[in-house]
Length: 74
Image (cartoon, rainbow, N blue to C red; front, side, top):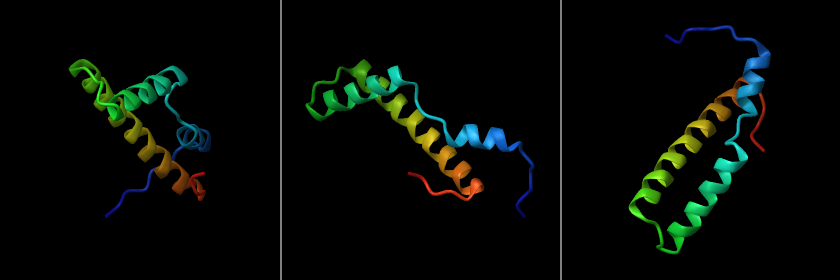
């Protein structure tokens, strides 16, 4: 059975608006470009994998928050 938990609307809205910081997003884009071109070092590959995991986690939290708010992702 699923539990029902109350949360402040402001908190759910903040989660729905969550994004990677701009500097981190730029680094992710750079690493993805280098990966596409086959230029990643082993350390960069580790960084890319960590950033992708972080980005995916944020996306899931955002999607769940949007669902709770009754909104569709843009």
